[in-house]
Every structure is written in structure tokens, then in C-alpha cells.
Length: 172
Image (cartoon, rainbow, N blue to C red; front, top):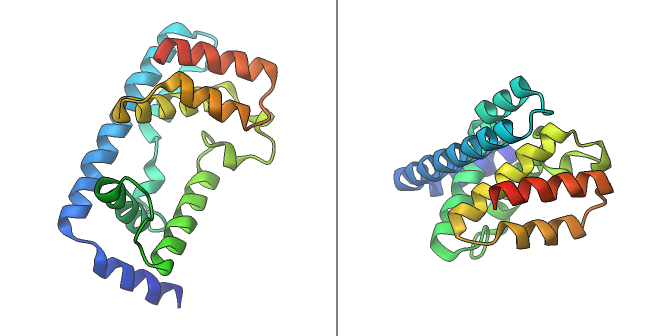
């Protein structure tokens, strides 16, 4: 049933949608990499090799079987209606939800990866803020405003909050 559903959704995907996904995602990843390089230069306490690996591997799972088609569809929908799922079929929304959940669980720079965000390493937090900054840079939104709102909704430790604020000050 699931394979049949994925095949149906694939029929909705066009070459233009795939090209847009690659262009937008690669630009996002390049901004994340630049942000991580800024962080490495200013935060010598971070594991430099781990941060370089994170920069290199950021969002790789979006190109895998579980995430690719739903992320192409979601990225295109953002372009068309500025919303991830508005106007899509219930089946397509379900596949997008599954892909996003898979992405979060596979990537430790997302808080949904953890049962307790206090377990996030400084390196994972640095990648998370680099990711936020990339989205802020793309959308022209305030990184500080986003970070303040996000942090208020999660049980970060005081030390993590202070670290996040220092990262936001650097990248914002």
C-alpha cells in the first residue's frame, strides 16, 4: 500500500519541481556551511572536525529514498503557496509528515531527535542554529525572533540557552 502511494505521489513530481528542490536545497546547505565556518572560527571549544563533518553532511537524508519525493513536493508547495502542505492531498500530506519525522529522527541537529533536549551536544546545537540562520537568511526574517520563540517552547538548560544566544548574536 505504501509503495503504491509513493508511486502515485511520484507521478505528481515534475522535472521543474526536482530542479527547484535541488537549487533551493543546495543553496540552503551552502548557507549552513558558511554559518558553521563562522562558528568554528569564533568557538574554539567546539570539536572542529565534527563541525566540518556536520557542514559536509548537513541535510544529506533529504536525498535518500524516505525523504526525497516528499521534500520535493513540500519545497515546491512552499514556492507556490508559501506553505508546506496547503492544497495537497491527504495522502501527500501523510507522506510529507512521515518524511519530516524521518528527517528529524535521523538528524541530531533537530530537537525532535531527542526525548530530552538537554542531551543535545554543543556541536548539534551549533548546527541547529546554523540551520535556523540559513532559513532566516533565505526568508529575510529575524534569526533572533525565531530563536527566542523556539527556545521558549523547549526545555533547554540555562547553559544551552546562553550558548544559543551567543550563536545567534554571531549569525544574526
